[in-house]
Image (cartoon, rainbow, N blue to C red; front, side, top):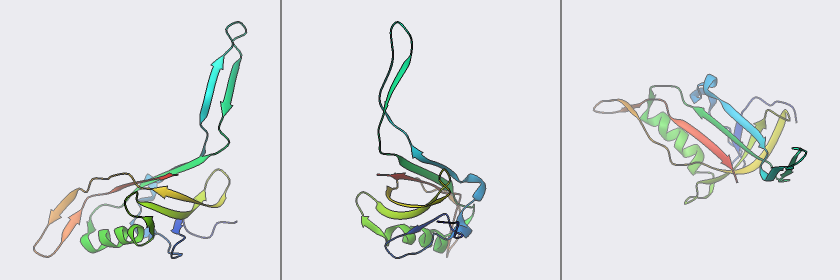
Amino acid sequence: MAWQGYLFKSTANNKVFPEKYIALESWSSTPNQREEIKAYRDDNTRELTRVTAQGKKSVFSFKTRKKLHLAEKQEIQDFFTSAEVDHVQRKIQLTFWNEETNDYQTGYFYRPNMPFKIYKISDDDIIYDEMSFELIEY
């Protein structure tokens, strides 16, 4: 599937993540990661033997732009929480741009715990420093 103008979206509500919040230079993805079940070298020939799992999982991460207002942070949070299929695990199904295959793929991802850094507070708002998101495929 050709590029359709977004990095990822929720499959639950077909909502595209608001990219205006992404610091694009922070975007990083490792699509289709390989995992070695076993790897060893022959004692005599030193030839490498690898047993690689058939399943491949993707990870992507990004930081938000700095100085997000409370309402903007809440919009980001709502994107994830409104589409979660399991709130305890923070499990969400996403369609994402796979840079290795240059097409869109769909998978279940989770968000690890993350810190919230405050930049400034006022009587009616909280301004946040950049936030880091990592999405790891199940």
